[in-house]
Length: 217
Image 1 (tube, rainbow, N blue to C red):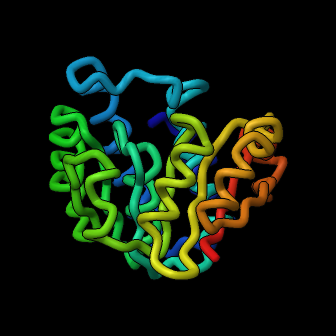
Image 2 (cartoon, helix red, strand yellow):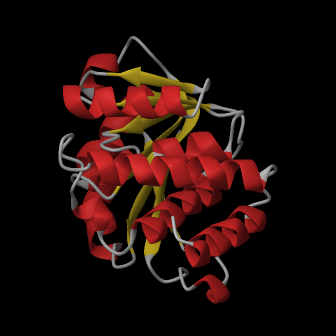
């Protein structure tokens, strides 16, 4: 990760009151290098790579604005290369993050990252998220810009413990998709809202994304 990007990442960590920023930036830099090295082999190229990798990682940190507690059991649905779950696990060691990923290659990459960075708060679940319903419950489910909101939100509700929360990182123009998903979410027992991230204008990130928050009632 280049120096200017590291500086901006450091400011983002400070903004979200993340302790031990220097050590965490070093881990994020190593993770960034591993992503680049393994991107083709593990099929990590996707729409999640819109913009620079550093911008994508800072997008992921915005999810913290939708979480109630940084000490929780978290499921990252459809983890892919880990741009959401790995970044959250690095930033918040008190979060136990289960990376739910059906691809064997992507799961192998996530396991390699977890080992290389000594992330003791990461678990890899090489299954489809639907297979975990009834077997595991989480305080928080998260996902990054993938799949239809109505389908993933209703699945997340089934994975959540009582009064749990699902947070989806989406593009900034999300209102139409939210309104389309609202009936299904409410029928499944959830309440849906949109949160605009507060990230400072000086970081140039405040208009890139929205958070869709679904509370299980």
